[in-house]
Image (cartoon, rainbow, N blue to C red; front, side):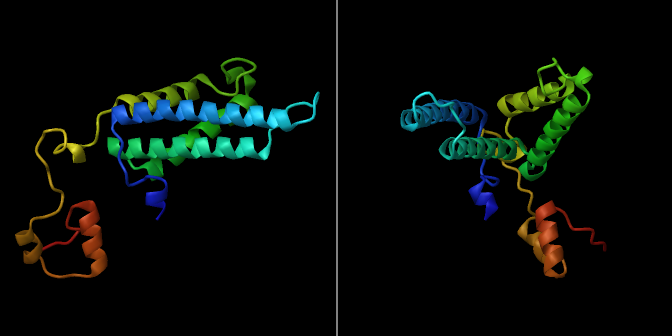
Length: 180
């Protein structure tokens, strides 16, 4: 079910990802500005602006939408978003910790990141924008379609085993370590 909610099973090409990201940026700016103006009109005159619940909810929705777009693009590249996105977040958190714990490694004294983390972030962002689609889309782009499942004659020739071995063989596209 999480695959459908977060778009882990969907794919998004380079151009669609770029245009969807631009659209998300425009929509998020409009949404947050409208919320900020509406909340400023309701706030007492002369009070300091605060980060209210509607603004935090809008920011959360924008972050979630961005995560969904990235997951769909990572899936299209051929990587597993369940592994790549947490690793990306872990690297950025580790970069933040290193930059705050050891300020001499930070980009500047007021920046909370290192050059290494910036280069990793840039590399992954460039990968999302410019890497071609994975091999599974070869048939869609005009190439020949390659099936990872064994042919029906090969499947029927195999001896029947447990269902977990059959699932593993189907997922990996192999024979799950069977011999003979």
